Image 1 (spheres, one colour):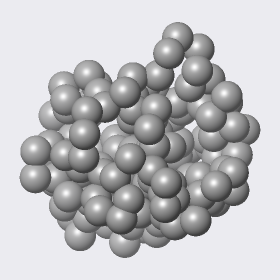
Image 2 (cartoon, rainbow, N blue to C red):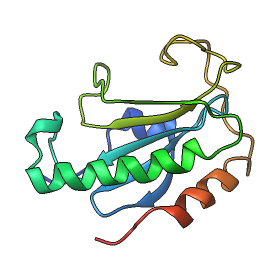
Image 3 (tube, helix red, strand yellow):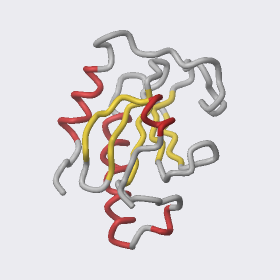
Image 4 (cartoon, rainbow, N blue to C red):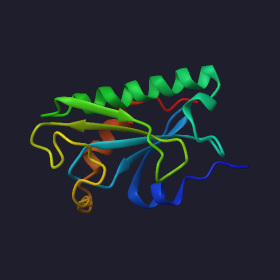
Length: 137
């Protein structure tokens, strides 16, 4: 088997960078600074199926993305999670939250309708992420 991004993730996100272990994606929803990390491992569904060294690497990637989002203006809370109820492929959500966001204080999943970024509007965040994460393999 070879790694392929789940079609729903491919449809709903913008590609940002290839990290050491994961593909870094930006959810195409301008209401939230919302990243997704997808380890490039075919058939991977659960965190604990990764070897310990890759679990450590994924945690480091989550930390890097978290630091970028936490530093954004107005962000007061980070949500990090791996649900996989609709997309079985292991993927980790990392998103910045604040009391005035469209879903506060509830979860973002299913809260309203996504608002895709206008052309070029996501580039600033995507470039900030690219400058701040380790892309070495």
